[in-house]
Length: 428
Image (cartoon, rainbow, N blue to C red):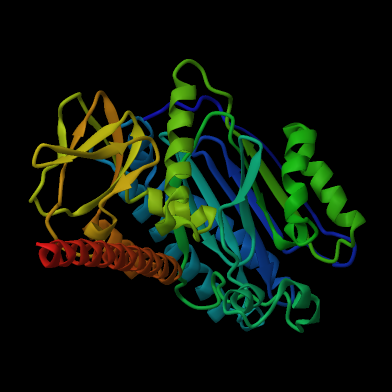
């Protein structure tokens, strides 16, 4: 596990320019490396209770698993990232059930709810639990990526093509969320994990802030405003632009790396880049690419090692990260594979034997995605499934057209040869 050093954070919440009470809440636990933003909803201050109680219950649930979380952070082999994900998912359900019960017992609070964005940073990885339309952004390498996807009416309409971004202002219930904590006894949360790199900065915020930010201006704000002033600047900006809702922001800074950190960062960047360049993954968003990366592994080979052998059944997609490979069959070279090149896309969906042997020319590192993990991913995530299967269909169609053109060329060449043979025979 990579040591990230001491994390720093800045946080604040503001009632805004219109509301009488603040139903947003945040929580920062530096020992747990836990950061939470909640945006409550419900009359008679019930929203403030829902958001406050959710922050508290999430912290208590995670504190009860402190030993296992600490073991993962310290690299213990008996606690995996999947265990941390399960702990975080369990904390969400526990918090949802307990806050929902308060609403059942007190009629004045019935139907209250809250959004939730919780982030744990442990053992060189980040873990996020997300419900509703608050957001988490990542600032890395001069770019800013939205790591969460809004559970909102507007986002659903956009995804289904029923609404364009120019029409958003005409929607009557612009603030309606499709998922919320505590409205029901349980909730479907988006839970994901990802590599955390030295120098990363994260922004957790309620919609009272991100609703006033243009996507294109967020990278500039991260670049021009220091972390210690960014929260206050963002809240002031939201108030200047209307402040119609409560405004909450938490900024987390990972210290810049020491020796060896650059190599880690370069490999993470490279994995994301080479995956996104492949036709199969060209249409996915950054947060979806992060999910896809989590079902891959990296393997190393020495010069002369066979990566795949002719005739063996393929069961994985392989992408070259470092070095070069030689493809050959029956002693005949069939080409060289360099960084960013891939082999085995069709092995994700069929069991055909490999048509050539691929051998490492020197030290190589390859990104691998197994067929079983690919199918597990598309079963669990409908949006990713649609994009990947559609892209795969396009890849197959393109290969079919290429093969058809090759066959036409071969038939043409055969016809020419046959005509020449007929002419030679007639002349004899």
